Image 1 (spheres, rainbow, N blue to C red):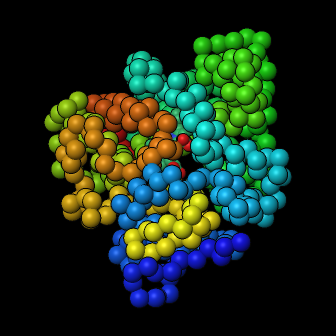
Image 2 (image 1 turned 120 degrees about the vertical axis):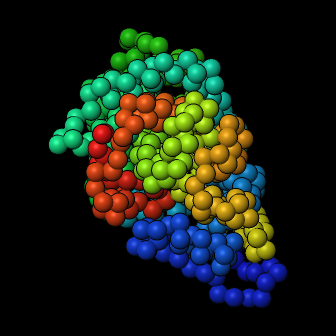
Length: 428
Ligand code: HEM
């Protein structure tokens, strides 16, 4: 087996820069941490927990797009020819005591598929998430938003926007779209949270088991009582031709869409409200013309505080040059989206929050939704939900302000994500 190594191609030989992704300073301020790393090296070696394999992280905008857009990288290590590699996460799951049967549901989703398999799954989902379908959903997203804002549980004049608004909105939307009954939504939210928690392996195993049983149960029910939802549509595809969509894939698709579709969007809304409150001049500009400036504002918010800070691992199928260094065949590498989104090589004055960077928000230059073959399938839906959410909040609560000192806000320390634990505000 080739030893995965990185040797400088054009630079003098130096020790690779190594960083621990669980480093408390990096988790507290990834923007400063990654800015430093990006200038030190285009590719840094990362340690993550006790994983023994050398892992790499790409820090610069151009290189991030290369790793995500170049077909010499695959998402499944099994597709690296001749090495018989195992997924680095498999080792971690075993260490956590998660049974292989359940780990498979986390290791073989659409994000883990390559080549024709990936195209097949993506085409199936893309049929449901067409621009038209997302557009048609808009009135419903507005209704759900209005309903949530009507019923905000205000305690002593204060509301937690993360708990009571940013979370319920996307989970309601995605569950309606997929066909998850209202009664089950609370459980999905808890499962989603459990999967993010690194310190509770038992919780992860239980969450996967819960999700799998819930989806299987729902599939059984929809077979008897079809509905106008994604699950019913996918069941039809599976029943017509199991080679187009297997039973296992059906479950993993639903799992991936519901999980990817609510937590991320919730945190974009939470992070986004805070970023706007942090920048009163930009908030005033947005208020002066919400419909004209909203798309550009969401675009800048995705760059500034997008909730996904790093992609999952890719594996090089051959030696590939990255920023003047060689990444050896088989090496697991992830792309730092937060680092790329603040790269001064791409963004002028990147630490300036400016909602007019791309006024119509059409040409997306940030990489907050990823890039290339695995570019986020729900990006249009997420953008739409965020636009509806911010528009409604600005219109209803022109005096909204933070209810606690800024430095008392806490983040949930999950590497690779940027999320507020809560956002207490006064509605004014
Ligand atoms: C993929 C971010 C919302 C479904 C991705 C990727 C990123 C991302 C960065 C690529 C990961 C990689 O290449 O390793 C986000 C953010 C969101 C969001 C920041 C909200 C602000 C959604 C929504 C859905 C969704 C609403 C579903 C309705 C997916 C799926 C993939 C994906 C299925 C996998 C695509 C593939 O492997 O081809 N997302 N996402 N996402 N996202 Fe999203």
